[in-house]
Image 1 (cartoon, rainbow, N blue to C red):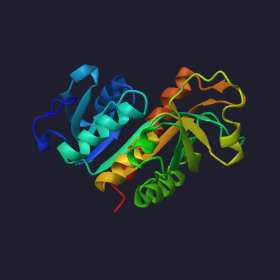
Image 2: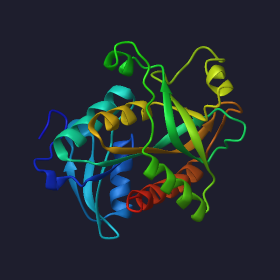
Image 3: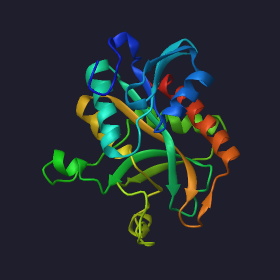
Image 4: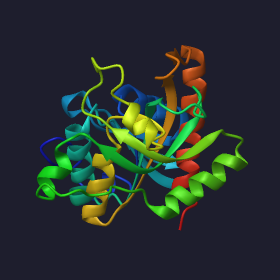
Length: 237
């Protein structure tokens, strides 16, 4: 048991963990995809479940929103509960013309405006990147499963609401595919403790055209993203 998690033993948590931001999505994933799922955490309303998927032990845990929240849960899962493969399944806002609402983003790297890495590295830059084995497997499987996916950098921001309409322009100009709020923290924590990490993101909004995915399409895209994440987790070496 840790400050933020109620699991008492390593056996409560599988080495492979899916990380949606919304705790209710964690419950949905467990009910929809897991066999013999059981609730393992309710501390602070951050629901977590363990079960099996096609015979493989797997856990899903909500992380909340933003870099600090992701960093707390990723750190405790890896350091205290033995998690070795962590896959974020969340949403993002596209900022490139070729990135459409409903597409998937496989985050190869993550820039950020958060001070998280600045504190850790004494003001120096750090390049948080995905595990190549997971990234490669996700890319190959996305094609085989018929998903429109893009591989590239994302921008992890501390601000959801920006007053400056041109805020994302510099990131767009440098080829960044989308913006979200957690990936840089996940990749940094995983690097620190030698774990594997990947963010698979559904483009829920197009920040250029101001289009958003409908509630029905959002559900369909989310289901596909989770299927891809689970297939990736147990296919990568």
